[in-house]
Amino acid sequence: MRLALFADLHANLEALTTCLAHAEAQGADQWAFLGDLVGYCADPGPVLDIVMAYAQTGAAVVLGNHDAAAVGLGGEDLNPNATTAIEWTRTKLTAAHRDFLAGLPLTVRDQDRLFVHASAAYPEKWIYITDPARAAHSLNAAQVTYVFGGHVHEPVLYYMGADANPQPFRPISGFAIPVPRHRRWLAIVGSCGQPRDGNPLTCYALFDSNRAEITWHRLPYDRDATARKIRAAGLPEKLAHRILVGD
Image 1 (tube, rainbow, N blue to C red):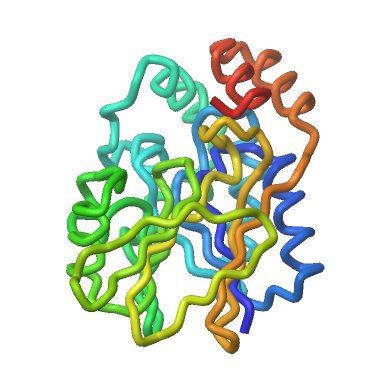
Image 2 (image 1 turned 135 degrees about the horizontal axis):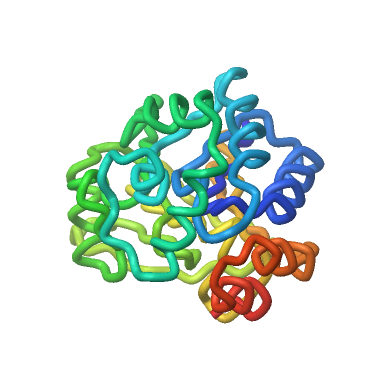
């Protein structure tokens, strides 16, 4: 089984379709979308249509804070640019889109893995996992072998060894990382729609359960088209610039 993992899509249609096509070519046969489907970019409707179609075929989908804000379920503690984008996004959602977002769970558990947008310890508080202590809290709360999440917009893998002290590892695109089941793992899959690690290439991860390996992929896509759409929608210029430079 090959599970494709996407987080922080942020209404970026060009990035999402690039990642989906790549994952299909890599043999992905399961799919998970780890929150923040909307916000920042200018294609909330088309992105939601795609994710909703995958959900109908069994894909796991969880709620992100931007998704919650878009339908009035909390998560509104956003910076001014993000708030502007969410206010604009609300005007673009259909009733079906709103119902879909409002019905998303904070977590999905599937056998030995848990899907969550932020921390499994307090998923409703949207805690950023930025250090080993927060990674430990999430892993201890989840009590599964694999926790898959997003929210941070940077790819990183934490593993819990015998000393119960998670160690971070920064993945390299295209290199499979062994994730054996005798340890516990927390994978932050990076952002499909708005990377912030200084690399503007879109990002997703592919988990191979048979081999117990996870591989991150960074891919070029038409960032200029995404930025043009953001500007045409009248959204803040910083959001277009971030797409282009990945800061």
